[in-house]
Length: 505
Ligand code: ADP
Image (cartoon, rainbow, N blue to C red; front, side, top):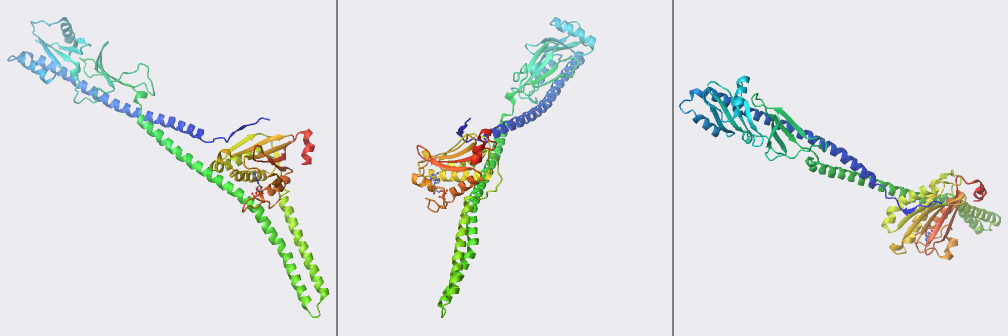
């Protein structure tokens, strides 16, 4: 027979943990998504501002170089003065070159750019130096042509710039195949990690002569996730689930206590109530008749002369009523010994009964320091589930009381189930003081008790219930110390070769 041995199953924690994990994942996903959407919006807004600011600067360069070409021949008084002052107003302008009709450019690139400018009729970029972030802007004019040397870093208006200079956004200007980094930002992974591949913004600056493409990039990934928000969510959802779990545990505990109370009340009412009510009702009438007859007999005997014949009749009546009272008592006793013989018999799984009982008793056992163990396995028996529960409960309650007499470390209560031929056995074994050998034959007698205030009806009721289900209830010592009560009930589907055994019970 397979035997499962072990402490009571610890129910509950795992489903809550799984639920919490699911909540964490779902909530976390939403929080990260919302945060990313918010940051993308802010990034796009900043990028548009940056684009406008740099475009304005480029347009400014175009305007300056055009003005210088126009002013060229008329600034005769101090032709170089205005150009020198430009550097103070526009720090990005490193130098201004002016080629007179008879002059030459300091380098070839400027000359080529002038030729291009003449053809395109707008300023042209020359000598783009990505390493230094510099270029020249050349506009061909008559009679003079003008070139500006421009520093890109200084072109950025840092005082009104929307992005912190040492912030996470990388800003660059692309010109053809060359790229100038305006601010480094955080390194952007080439392979995107996390929920998005980061944000990016690319747009050409609004100047036909300076075809730069503004590029902004920002990394997103676990490092950028809103960890504080996620931690708050974890704490909040965990707390909410903990409160829920506690409430449910409390409700279960309350239900369990109520079930226990009901069981106890049923047991007490079932025995005491029925018995007391029955006795009162059945004995009232014969006792009243005994009293009336004896009083009448006394009066008849007091008469002068005494009415002996009638008095004798009255005494005979009294005796008959007293006999009836004795019959009533005998009948009541039979009732106690075989209650509810007609209750329907259905298949009952002893393990299920034992598990239920253990679950009900577990808190009380814990309080009393009792190790509660369930073990074994058996096919279904034929019986009345309520009656079996009642028996287990009574036996276990007795065992827990008996265990009070031994030190807490030695308190052990085993609820066992096994099969024995055509019978299913349910045993309740304790490591208490046991039952003295001379008390063993008396233990199932009604009103036998060793407890102050005990009724001595629990075991006799259990035995009656067992018999009503065609079963037996036995007791034996449980070495090294303690008592073992064993309920035997016929199996629901008895094997053919043991059918006669079942009939016998
Ligand atoms: P009550 O519990 O009211 O005394 P019971 O019929 O349930 O009535 O029990 C009768 C007596 O049997 C108890 O008073 C006790 O002396 C003895 N008894 C019952 N169960 C045990 C047990 N597990 N260990 C020792 N004695 C027991």
